[in-house]
Amino acid sequence: MTLTKADLVQQVYKKHANLTKAQATESVEAFLRISKNSLISGSDLLLSGFGKFNVKDKSSRRGRNPQTGQELTLEARRVVTFKPSGILRDKINEN
Image (cartoon, rainbow, N blue to C red; front, side):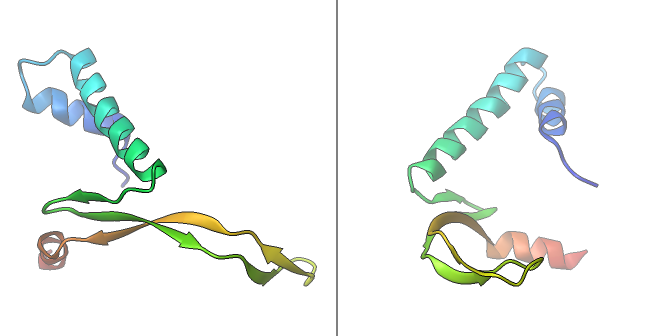
């Protein structure tokens, strides 16, 4: 099962009776927008009790096209990694 953005909005809406559905949607969208902008700018995103998202630079490297076997150079790029907090890791392993 996958948790979607619509599911997040629904959960926020259910748990906060004072919010309209539109306000719940905007709250989730605002959080995601702030998170994305932080990562795009190269900053790490730390959510206590959940984990840390890091932006890492990968240098260019040699690779191979799996269909043709032809060697090629993979361009340098940035990737996002996630490391769960100890609390989250423990909770996942309890079940």
